[in-house]
Image (spheres, protein in one colour):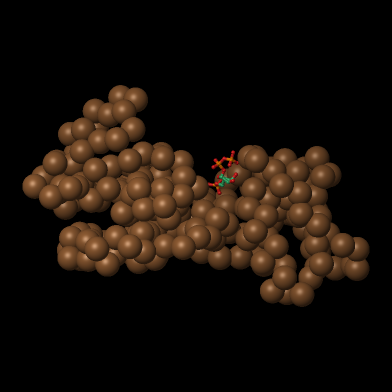
Length: 209
Ligand code: PRP
């Protein structure tokens, strides 16, 4: 048996969706279902080794070549960047980046420089640079919706999935920024050195999407 292809999965929802995808492919997911606190697991019949990591770390491991492949959200890819190939849109983990704020305000009205809170300062900066609009950014780590409610910012750039968090807090979408879904990324050397195996796996995945 050759060395397994190592794939980093973003822990949590994308992990669950990816395991469901592996099951659809008929892979033996026993270890993934009974993982306990183990972080490296085998899918023996597919010659795959699965590494469970946080989203930004999935990119780091793939960039450094310690993992051949990764499954990570487009949100993390857009914020983090890096040198790897993004090869497949898995179609799950669908949500969007949006500019949101208190209901009924005219966000683009007036001349004062606006303050935007976000967990994604890079995405926010590029979005407003594209409009040629000067803004201030405040980095927030979670529950970003709090920032405009507390008067810290005029708006937020955040992930919207169902829209419930916005609705329940009197906020609304002012403008969509970008669609998000889970992507497969590949290390730039692995794609050459293990071309056949990686292309074979991706073709099987794409056939069931
Ligand atoms: C995300 C996002 C929103 C919420 C959107 O937060 O930042 O707060 O989900 O989902 P909805 O449109 O379905 O309500 P997450 O739950 O990941 O936690 P965080 O705010 O701590 O990052």
